[in-house]
Length: 255
Image (cartoon, helix red, strand yellow):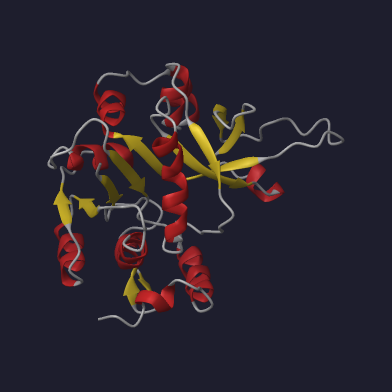
């Protein structure tokens, strides 16, 4: 079985143009994402997929693998799926979408997210999740998740869920962490055969497509803390965090 990591990246971010190439500890963000993903114990292949030749040149400069895709692909997951079609994959192989704006990703996060697909035949896609803070609940950029008793996602929203009316009830508040392993057969079906759903459009959350079509999305709690980069302030915060990061020394001094 192949386990392939795909990292989508493009220069045209509306909030932070050019962010895959922004410098963090003297390395472009895309290099951090790539080299940390490379430390996964389970992955057998790794690629960046982009429509931008500047990104391609940068990735190739640190001996990374790049698959080019068309500019008009909006969704990161779809960009990875289109790129993966260039590989010789079997339906049971696994393709993991790792966002290109997560420079603090811990490689064990990837391996943790993959586990349900290795252990359970009826799980076709999984996502990481972590405990949501009060700030996360009120932040529309953070995707909140409610789960059944087996940690399958029941619903995802940019609004606070579940309700905080009954504060005396002990419950967990979860937020999505965007590491998404798919079985390759299901990834093809998801992108080519399953039409977008009303809830997916309403919330702008593509995992709702799988849920509303009746498929399980297994959520995997993660103990690791990551930080996405969407603004220059985020970049500065990550640069500070990188100074005490345990994974950076494993690749930070490499050429």
